[in-house]
Length: 404
Image 1 (cartoon, rainbow, N blue to C red):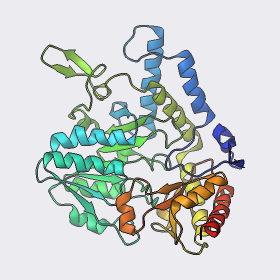
Image 2 (image 1 turned 90 degrees about the horizontal axis):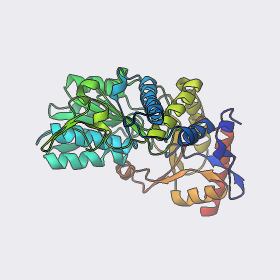
Image 3 (image 1 turned 90 degrees about the vertical axis):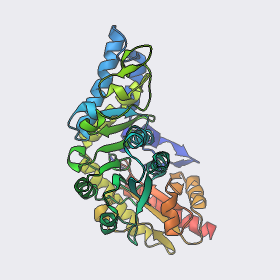
């Protein structure tokens, strides 16, 4: 058993009379007891609005909230804690970039460049905002194994490209995209880069300062934290010139009858009562990950993925999606089985207490490009073990035998 498993109370749960084997971490990870306790403690002892009250509870709550911002900034290598905006998740973060930056800075004829491998959250906002301003959305073609094609990227990187929207890690193939190189090429082209880091921050060390991107988005619930909290990091000089996404209390400086002015960053972008307890819980999750070490988290994910792929490839008719090169992957693997629908596989696995994800994983374009309707995805976290993968393989063989 993983030495970390005991820290996660939900992993003691039984499903259909079987011990839970949780392999759906790319969708949502589980939270350790210390995160759950931090949330409970906030509601019991510190609950109050931030930045609003001159009393002890409000001051405590404000300090906890702003300390969380500093903790997250340090965790991802941000230069300034003011570059951290709390959101409700990656989707909102990406929408803030689309509305706050693209809508106000792109014009007819400009191009946003992305790939067919993107999660819908890193696709639909660009579709909508480019349509509104008369700009265009274009796609970087992928290699045959659905890895990133750097040569096609160079070809598509014309002077009209103002923004490159890219995942740091694919939520289907697990591939780590060459973001640092992409950012270097984009900078030479005077293009900005927005990175969907939802699958990266939870699996590997990330330093936004060294990547060279302008925007970086991720979610707390994929990195052992609470649901409903996310982060948008924006390079300070860009953030100061961006327009707010929402208006109201907490984000204003001066209000007059005819107009208003905005507070300084980051509060300019956090209208209304923020998710204070979510930020507090996220900070505790960050501390937990830091104690383990993100290099350890990454190594564990790679080892589990290598073992899983080795065993999966022994199953007749099973095809792994993406490259099998373990050197450039994180802790997830998606696959299809000839003649068997992924939803049926997931249902049979669930009967044995094994949780996986089945469907298009909010990446319809990639599945269409692959010529398949859906896939099954197993994704790992620090509490998973080779024994969990053995259970998956045993359950898969049972599923295929029953369904064929």
